[in-house]
Length: 302
Image (cartoon, rainbow, N blue to C red; front, side, top):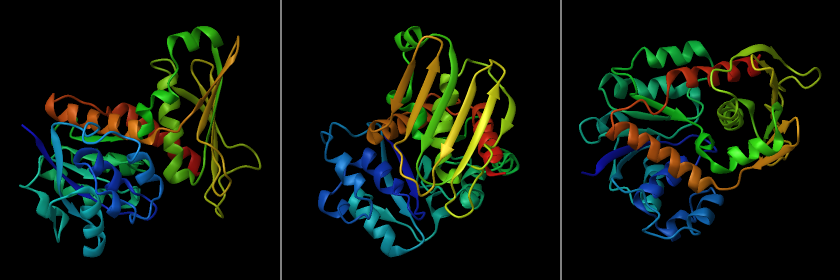
């Protein structure tokens, strides 16, 4: 049986309603060129269609804040139905893609679907404070109903292999950089770094780097964290400063640079994990992990 999904968009600067829907449905190349996010048609055209689609689900309905936007996304990503209210998806779909990264609006959009018991993928960052995160989880009807992540959590490019760990030795420091704002983009480096740390590692000290504390002008930010393992992590969101999204892992015998470039594979893996959680009735996005991510985001905003 193919699952029916509904997508909710669209936040400024975030093209996920286009790309996520295309990964399920395929896409119209001419219409996708007009999406306003030039990188999306470029990485979509590098795939083999329809082979590259995710099997077992289809995005069948969309709501955005304007009918014009909804038509643009539906034309580009082959979505059959445009709805006038997001909650009209209830009864029509088996799951929700809340493909907006404006965390301050996540509770408003997610609440009716959580109360209805629909599984929901909430785009990164799910929340910017633990109190906001807890409000969402208070609405869960069952464990695992909420799925959230930065897709970079699933990026093979940002993972250490066993051979990498052998070469670099015992990890001492991890330094990670992302362009753009702390609030929306730090999550992209926090999640992969947490996956590199030893299981059960917990933060024991937080600090902003003197002179580089979060800028209100360009929304950059930085955070140092000392972990119970003794590892020190440094997270930099460079705001208007240009940098590749990268992670340097420094060990006792060497270092490894991890650089991100493959958006399509990361998005596809994250969406497949969401589907697996639905079909296997398992917790695919643990609350404990998500709480640790949001804790770091919140500390970096202070």
